[in-house]
Length: 500
Ligand SMILES: O=P(O)(O)OC[C@H]1O[C@@H](O)[C@H](O)[C@@H](O)[C@@H]1O
Image (cartoon, helix red, strand yellow):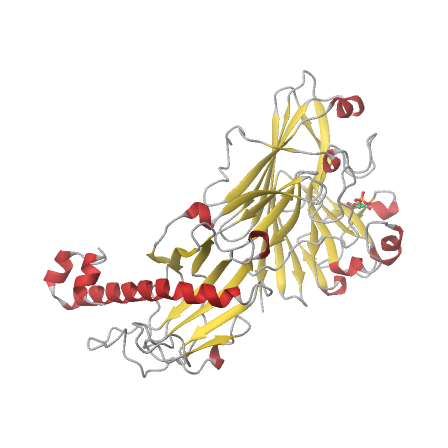
């Protein structure tokens, strides 16, 4: 690409071209390089689309492409590249890629979903590693020949592409590189996130809030961030049923025997226990909120403290008591729940409960989070050391936690009291750690039914206790009391870090 063409594309200012010093030359070359990458990527999308169409049965299939074989096989093609497509699992073991020379480029893709939108609709996220060299005599894109020896440290971030189902054209939504990668010879853009270009900038396409129906006709809201992480929230119980990383990995457990038909509570995800936790009260076990059909709140009142909508995809749900509920719990309330998915893929649940009655009421609440784990005997919970807890297996008797961290070898059913606001669940086998950050939720429930109890639950597999652990942010020991007109806010943020 010529400087003139780059100028025309608006990437380089006239002033910069005229300046002609070393610094401005470097900037011009960088702009040309970006322009080349842009054109190359756009040209590449159709080829990519065609290739992906043959892989629809493998959502989450990965494609690695680098110049070690044929990429554009047509020698007359402008971007003819005597390289080959490489298909394989991703992340590719970087050091194994030994055929990387300056001027080559590589794309890793994570295909997130195809099925809900038909075979022609993919959303994928990719990593562009393009080897940059500002060689002044560069022909084509840049001269080949140098090798990168150190690939470590590159991060999977990058760009996001959606297929425009109307026009049948591929749209490059956003290209943004934030690799922290350096080697002596090679430089990858920037240390800080740099948006290389925004071709068809359409953030609404990149992030999505979609309402679908489940098998029982109940609405579910699917949240998807631009990196491809997702969460699914059912109006049945206002219950988060799925939380997935941008790699498509499910982080919440749901039993294979779960009963989804309302008003049964669903065994898995994050049921909300409200206005009562457990069976200590006049209401049914864990209150009625988890059995009710919530509504989508079209006009939620503004938040006074946190504005949890910046850079996030979210949905607002609302529960108001029915006539029936008022007969068993005579308190008018509005329970507003905002479920957010952050750019990083964290799941945030902000609850606001308002007393709209003329007399005070008290409630307890728990976000009964079923974490998906590899094996209960490999898991450790930190953040509960030395705390007092009420043991449901001993008629809620009070004990003090003695161990350094909580590990599991039998049934556990406890309410830890007044914990710190950060709890961590380490899954050694899976090499991932969940972090629970909470506000307004002083207590933590830890529950695993173990073998015997599992067998007595109709909606739970006999062996499934090995794959789940409930760790809930909760307010149980000291009930929350609201005077007429008062509002309580609780906030829970779940994040996950992989260590392997
Ligand atoms: O079966 P449910 O009503 O969903 O409750 C599951 C468990 O939830 C826990 O939080 C309770 O402490 C346990 O006692 C209970 O067994």
